[in-house]
Image (cartoon, rainbow over the protein chains, first blue to last red):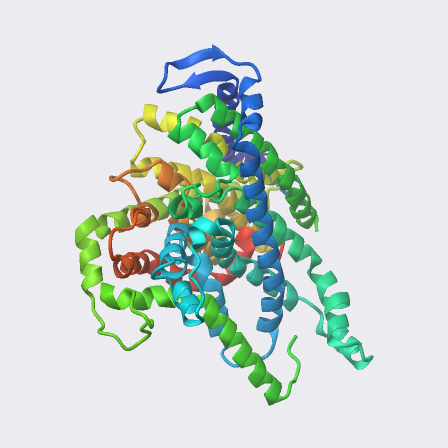
Length: 288
Length: 276
């Protein structure tokens, strides 16, 4: 349908977006790659020459590396399990007929719109603080010793905060998926005497599997790079330093750019592995 | 799944859902309530829920102490500016991909999506360095550019999925009647595309408003938006719950309201059309 003129016009219209994104991707990426092979300490002598793979080796052999990998894994997996399990249950609940459905939906979605620095600080101070936090009040009410959450349970605390932020996202997507389920199928199963648990396991869960996969992949990409929630709560202390936070500290706080850039390259590779799976699903949908 | 149910079951559902909804919303409610308390009431045990002396003093103190209005203005400029700039660049691109698709359209879309997967921390130093050398550190224009670039893939994708829904026959009819490309875009396409563009703008303002990696790392006192303003409360200073709550309430209120309007777009925008 398109003429030759409109084809070249189309290319022209696409050009700004493509050129900008290409530059945004290639320039910093090339610089990171370049720095990762240099011995570059801006505050201590500047660029001191080629370092080969030293930075890559030092990054993974430093004592902070494995704890950071574990911390990242803990947080990402913890949040994924909590948000998907609760998200499925919540989506099922919200799909039921009830009074005031619209308002309940709004209440459930609201945390997603709270900026990360606010949720980090509000949870840290007003809920998890061991003296004046609400949790401490509750613990004392039951005669228990209040917990110093940020110090002794940094993972539980961060997982709680981040899950609270992402549960709405999972719920909303799973709810959208549930609403597209053909209710006749469920009714037929109900008539045939399939108990609720079986209907859930053999009809609803398979129907949701695609949406669950999408939630898992998208959240993984965002969760791998959570930053502000840690920045304002523990600042990486008490063993809560994730890979992202470790790289941030290497690059900006200790200004060891070579080492941090090598870490950055690892992070990019990791994110790309996840991204490939997500892209496949999105790509398939594009054809349909 | 609208099925007829007994009203008993409906009551149970309602009670359960409201209970869960209120628990999830509670931290926000608690923050808003605390912002109207005195610092003494804010840490009172047992906690005071509604029966305390309501006061507005915290809002005055927060504004006085750190010039809230300047941060708010920075947030508005950065979130609004990056979104509008992104839309101006993305509309032509999405338009051409939706209506003049070529063999490579899908590849280009997928590639744009892939730039979104790049972890920010991986390119932190290069961007930081460029900002220093171009004098962009702690400027609003610098953040407008960076946030525009990180959201551009989402903007293009959202617009693309909206434009795709506009029937191509209408455009062909306009072309048959002798409309030029410019007229076609201006008088035929634009009116039909406005709802999609509006939703895209809404969602991206929210994303840019809450962005807290680049805004924290690339700003200081001058161009810091509300995310940075709140982060300045991370070192505790005596009694500060009520002030923190007032600052937080002011930072999230505008976006909570916008957010409630954009529930539907959220799914489309953040799953790149993978869930409809």
